[in-house]
Image 1: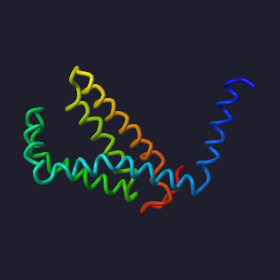
Image 2: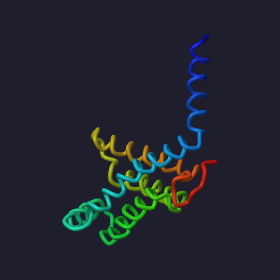
Image 3: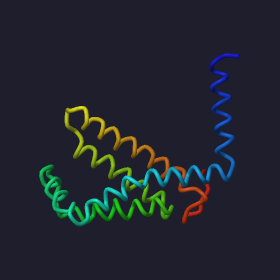
Image 4: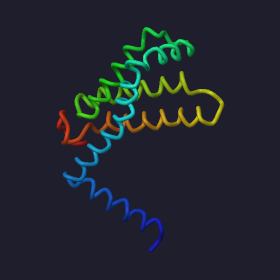
Length: 147
C-alpha cells in the first residue's frame, strides 16, 4: 500500500468521525471556545486600568483613540457572541476582518516577534472565515448544522 493510500485512509477516517453528529457538534463548540478566548480576554483587558495604555498605543500607531470603545465592543461582544454561537457567521466575518486590519496596523514591524504576531492574526482570520463558511454547529444559539 502506498503512502498516499495510507494518508487517504486516515483522512477518510477523520472525515467519518467528525461527521458523527455528537463529535462534530462537540468539535465546533471546542473550536468556538478556543477562537473566542483571545477576543474576550483582549477586550476585557482594555477595560479599567488597560484603557489609557491602549488609547496611547493606538494613538502612537496613528489610530484615533476614540475608536477604542468600538474595538472593545467588537472584541468583547463579538467574542462572547462567537462563544455562544450567536449570529456566528456575521460575527466571525467581522472578527476576521478586524484581525487582518489590526495585524496590518499593529504588527508590520521587521522584527521576528512582530512577524509572528502578524501571522497569528492571519491564522485567526482563517479560522474565523471557516466559521463564516460553516456556521457555529448544533451546540450554539444559532443551532445550525455545518454545511
